[in-house]
Amino acid sequence: MKAKPLHHYDNDIRFYNSPNMKYKLDKSAHSVFALYYHLMIVVKYRRKALYPDDIRERLKDIVWDLSTELGIEVVAHEPAEDHYHLLFKATPKTNPVNAVNVIKGVSSRRLRQEFPATKDLLCENSFWSPSYFPCNIGAGKP
Image 1 (tube, one colour):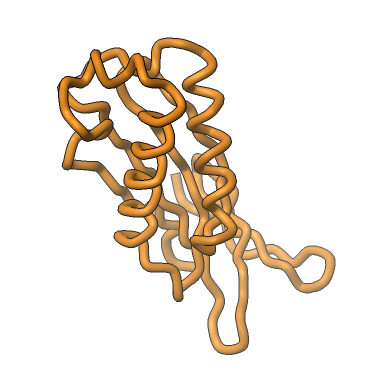
Image 2: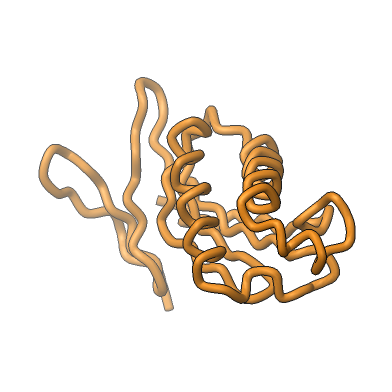
């Protein structure tokens, strides 16, 4: 299926329609961009540490609070029992690797402090696996 061309909307905001998703093109002084990232991080040893709803909700709150500091916009996020999916929007100045490291580090520390029972489940001093999966969700050519 061929992508549709750009369309103009109010205040000259442009949208790019791909076959599966509508992208809002943002702009700065010298660029137009649509940078979306899908991040997946896994609990250490794939343990079911995110099973209780209160831990899942707290994880969402932590990431939401960090988003402003990191210069990202949370589009969607959903924790599962043993992993976490995050779709976020960034600017060209955003450092995605730094954003991932901050999200993993801060959320790990806060979840282990606020939910001490997770320490028994994970056996070590880390909540997340050292690996992660970032994927750029590109809008294609405008």
